[in-house]
Each structure stands twice: as C-alpha cells, then as structure tokens.
Amino acid sequence: MKKAEKGIRKFTKVFKWLPIQLSFCFLLTSFPLFAQDSLSLKQAVEIGLEVNFNIQIFRNNREIAIRNYQPGVAGLLPELEIIDARATRSIDDVRQEFLDGQANIRNNAVTDRVFLLARLQQLVFDGFGQFRRFKALKALRDVGIYQSDSATQSTVRDICIGYYTVVLEQFLVKVFRANVELSAERVRIARDKFELGRFSKLDLLAAQVDYIEDTVELVHQLENLYTAKTSLNIFLGREPALDYYATDSLKIYEQIPLVRLQEQMYRFNPVIKAAEANWRWAKYVLQSTKSEHWPSIWLILRFQLDDFTTQAGFLASNSVVGYTIGARLSWFLFQGFRLNIRQQNARTSLRTTSTFLSLTQLEFDALLNQIYFRYANSFILVKLERKNLEIARENVAIVFARYRLGKSDFVQLRLVQRNAVVAASRLVQALFTLKAAEVELLRISGTILEEVERLY
Image (tube, rainbow, N blue to C red):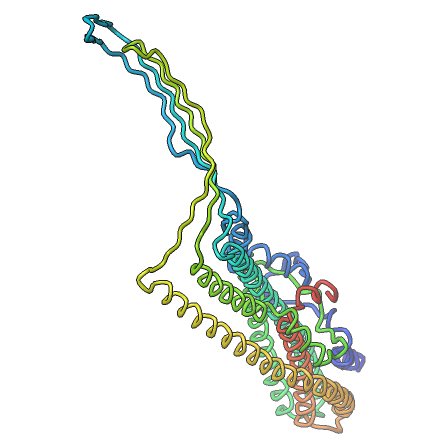
C-alpha cells in the first residue's frame, strides 16, 4: 500500500508542478548514460552566431558594403597618376661632320635620360553627381548592414525554436516516464491482488498490456528528444551525437502590446529597413544619371621632369623641371540616347523599389497580426490547460485510491491516467506554441537580439 501511495504521489507531482517548474524537468534517457553538458539558450545563441554559414556570408557582404562607402569611390577625392616614368642609358659610337669641316668622333659615347610625368586632378563639378553617388553608396552600405542583421535575427529565431523544441521533448519524456512508473505500480497491485484472489487475471493482463503500451510511447518520445537534440546540434555546428540537457524553461513573460510591436517593426525590422535603403539607392542613382546632363570640370596639376646628359653631339646636357596648372571640361552633347535609356531604367527601378517597400510593409503587418492572434490565444489556452491539468491530476489521485481499494476497475483508472498524460502534453504544447509565437514576434519587431540578451 505504501508503494502504491508513493507511485501515485510521484505521478501527480509531475503534473502539479508542470506550469511552474518546467526548467527543472531534465531528461533521464534510456540511451547509454554519460556526463551531460548543460546548454542554456544564451549559450546556444552565442554558438550559433559564431558558426552559422549564412551569417558568415552576410557578414562578408556587410564588410564589402561598408568598405565601399568611401569618398574616393564616389569621386570626391583627387586622383594622382604617374603617366610616364623612364630611366634609360645608351652607349653609341658617334661620327659627326659639320659644315665648317670639323668632325666629332666618339666611341662608346654614353647618353643618360630620366623622364617623369605625373598628374594630379580633381573633379570639381559634374552636376553634383559625385555627391549623389556618395549617397547611393551609403544606401548600399545600409542594405548590406540590414541584410546581415536580418540573417542574424532569423538565425536567432531558429535557434530559439530549436532549443524550445528540446525543452518540450525533455518534459514529455518526463511525463511519459512518470506514466510508465504509474503503470508499473498498477501491474504490481494487480499481481498482488490476483494472487490473493481479489482480481481476475483479466485485470493483470490489462495492466501488463497498458504498461507495455506506455513503455513503447516512452521509447518513441526518447527518439523524438534525440532527434530534436541532433537537429539543434547540427544547426549549432556541433557533433550531432553530443548529448546535453537544456537548462532554460518555457517561461511566460507579460504579454507584449500589439501597438508596441507595430512601432518597433517599422523602426527596427531589418527587412523593412533594407527595403527603405534600397529605395533610397534607386533614388540617388536616378539623380546621378540626371547629373550627366551637365558638363564635368576638372582642375589639373601636371608635373614634368626631364633630365638629359650625353657624350655624343654638341649638347652636353638638358634638364627641364616644370608644373602645368589648368582645367579640363568635358560635356557629352549626344550619347546615342544611352543617357535617356539609363534615366528611364532608373525611374523604373525607383518605382519597383517603392512598390517592393510597400509590399514588404504590408506583408509584415499582416504577418505580425496573424502571429499576434496566435500569441494572444496561447495565453488563453495555457490558462485553460493549466486548469484542465489540475482537474486531471485530481482525478488520477481519486481513481487510483479507489482502484487500490478495489472500488474502481482498470478501465476507469486507464481512462483518467491517459487523460492526465494528454492534459500534461497539451499544456506543454500550448506553452511551446506561446514561446514560438513570442520569438517570431520579437523577430518581426527587430528586437529579438536585445530581448534574448535581456530576458535570457
């Protein structure tokens, strides 16, 4: 009798503390046991951000976009060019005869020459095109940054959901294991009472069948947990077979107001911000093409060095060092309509990016409302499932006590036992759905990184 009471207390205790202490429900698997590493959600996020390949690719693109945002790329800085640089030496046999009868005859005459021509030029006016190109580069830099942020936040979302899946499967293992222990206690009671002649063999066989059925469910649930852990390990770039237990829980925080999420979405969502930056880029590209209707004016400073010495001829040396300052103007008066075509294409691109921006905002607004509806409903479902679990737990305690006294049959006990398992499973599933919706809402609002750091 004491063993029976112990079994029922163990079973009901699992369900009693389910809404409060999910964080302490860890796996006791039937696989080969060895020391398990603990893994918190924050640790999982840190590992994932370091090794995820998509994030590495977008980080590289981000570096390129930031590096390209330089004044020199837009033509705002002067250009220094060495046009020609030469140093030569020639050795010749020379024979020169002049009109006055004199002659200049030299063997192995050496002639040296050093020549340098350099140019410094600065574009001072091109219809303000260089300033618009610089703004376009800034917009491209922003696109690269926001795309990198979007990849990072999507990865954090996937890590959180994968982690919470492990937490979900861990607790379901705990539930099914407690259910198996209760079924084992029921088999023991049925065997004792059968031996005393108080139960029929049908009661004992039914208890044994139910015990096997519950054990099979536990084995399947252990497989589900192993699959969830393996999937998360692969996503984190770790050994697939690495065992661990998830230490965080499906903790519920205060419900986030929809208005606040909408405000944050338009301010911080990286996909929307990238679409806005892409629209700005298209606008500056169009303005840049309009600048080509104006002439381009360059200020030019040219430096020349020409040093010449020779042993052949009547001129022994000649040295020239000088600077030339000037301006150059170029103006395309006709380009075969190429400029007009580029302007038309730029206008079309601007309309396309504007439409894409509106579409992106509309899609995220719809997605936010859809996920928030699920999020708000999950709070209601969790409250109902908690109440349902309390009732199911009480039913188990009552019917098991009656079964022990022989006042309830195995059919009634099996029914309330299954109801309790289903109630516990539904509650933890409702908690998981709520957390998954919460994580998705934080991603849509563009604040998931900050919230994970603050809350977890």
